[in-house]
Image (cartoon, rainbow, N blue to C red; front, top):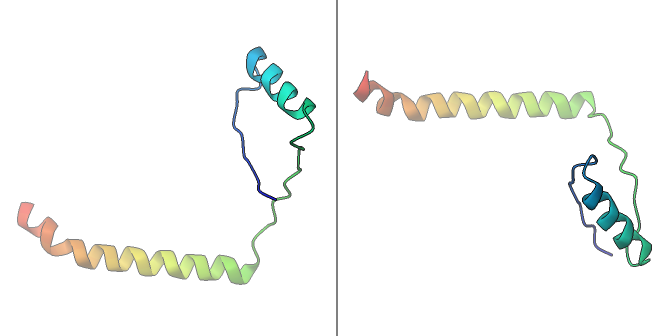
Length: 69
C-alpha cells in the first residue's frame, strides 16, 4: 500500500468537489495522521547535530568570507 499526500485550499469549491469525487470512487481512503512529540533524547540529538552543522559551516566558509571583507 502506498500513501499519497494532497495539499489543497479548503476554501476552493472545485478542489473540495474533486477530492470528494476521488474519495467516492473507493480507490482511496482518508487516513488520520497522528504527529508524535519528539522524545527528549531526539531533541538533544537534533540540537547537537544542528550545532555541529553550524560550527562546520562557519569554519568552512570563514576563508571565503574573509576574502570579501
